[in-house]
Structure formats: structure tokens, C-alpha cells
View 1 (tube, rainbow, N blue to C red):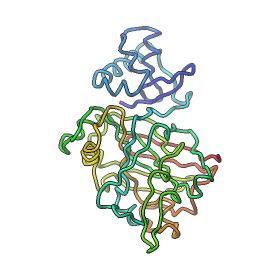
View 2 (cartoon, one colour):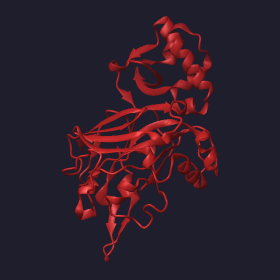
View 3 (tube, helix red, strand yellow):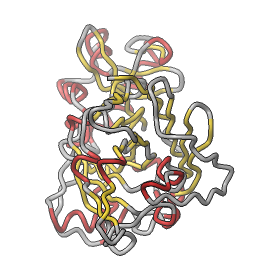
Length: 321
């Protein structure tokens, strides 16, 4: 099941993708009834997640009823989607693809353990929303396509072999980064990262367009992952290339925090970022898989698109501050 969010009469609604339509369970209940009071879960994606699998069964009933009655449906082309959720916390794993590690200046932990940092709901924007290029913050704005893991079942110290039982579904996140805030150099030329100012700022986490239930992606380690800037293929890899799998990341993050419904884990990015062509920041372009080297960092007017197999494509335009 694929979930999306749109606005109806100024209020956000959780919907279910059904071909070229979105099924709105709340609108369906208002029109013909038949779903009951639990339809209120669909006012908030976190409530849908928290009440799974019952909410999934209710969603399936809504899709069938909407098709039968011809109401509670809206054409996907007639709406603008919002971010499908605002995560309570975004747990981020940096340096999780060998190809990305090879193209950049490394930190002391690159490739040795997941580089752990956080983003918040304040960073999130939806598909088609603008990424703000603020020259006071950065002159080197970069994008990174990443698989997002939506937590559905709470847990602490989750064993690897049980980790995927705690996953509700998957989405796409663009880990927008201010490279000149992230990468710092010591006098001896070695580098270190400041992941706060380099990663956490307004519009630095475009998310969506959908959340896909885990039942549709039984193996998250076999998904193609790509990004484009202005139609040029910049990243092209597969989640099989992760150093730490989704299950391992769920385990690692659950050592620090009790994972709760509505949290999202982002899982790192492959090679092809603009950083790879920036020798000033230690970039080392290597190419491969048909990717095109960046001529520079993101600028106002650029369109960045991020895609993961089975989920969809997240599109965002860059705008000036």
C-alpha cells in the first residue's frame, strides 16, 4: 500500500494511492459511511503507522469501497502532494556507501561505523516544494538521494534478525547538505565534519512523495537508487551497496534511542554528489554507471530529482532565499 498526503479545504489528509487516483478515507466516510470512527486515524500519518496493521486493513476497505461507489477519490494529477509525514526524529547514517566514501574527504569514522546525526521535522518539505538556497548559510549546497526507513513498531536494543519487524514502510529523503559548513580541515590537512550546521537547516530534508508499506518491499537491500539535476543523471546505484543494511541500522540506532512509530532512519547516499568534483573540499570524481559529473553545486532554478525503485520520484526546485 502506498500512502500520500494532500490538502483538502486547507487541512492535510492521509490518502492511499490507487492507480491514477488518491483514495481519501475521511472524504469517503463523510460521503457514504461504512468505515467507522477509526477513519480519524487518516488525519495523521503517525496515527496510521501507530495503528497498523488495523489501519492497513481499513485502508484496503476504503480503496474497495471508493472503487465501488465512485466517491472519495481524487485524481492524482489534480492535487499537489505534501510531505507524507513530519517525522518526530530523523536518524541519519552518513558514509554508508563505499562509492561515496571514495569520492570525498573522509572523517575519522568514515566506513568504520555509521556517522550518526539528526534532522528534525523543521527540515522537512514535500515533493514539489522548494529547497531554499541561502547564501548566508552556504555557497556549496548539495543533494543526496537516500532511502528513508519509517519505523512502525517501538523497540530498544532491537536485534538485527528482528529489526525489519519494526519497519512500517519506506520513503525517499533528499539529505540536502551545506558542504562548506560540513567539511572542515585541520592544520595537517586532515578533515573532520561539523554535521550540525552542515546538515540541519530549513528545507534540508525533502521527503516523499509516498510512504510504501513494508509488505511491498520485503527486501530493502535490492533497490535501485538514483538522482538527477536538470535531467543529468548524477547518482545511480543500488541499496545492495550499503555498508550497513537497513536491519543493521535499525539495530544500531535502537541502542541509543527507543525507536517509536513515526521516526525515520535515512540510510546514506551513493557516489555522484557535487562534492566529488570539488577538489577544494577533498572531492575525488570517479564516475561509472552512466553518471555525469556536476559542473558545480546546486543553484537557484535547478531541479533535483531523487528516485528509489518501488517508491517513486521526489522532485524539488532550488530557489533563492
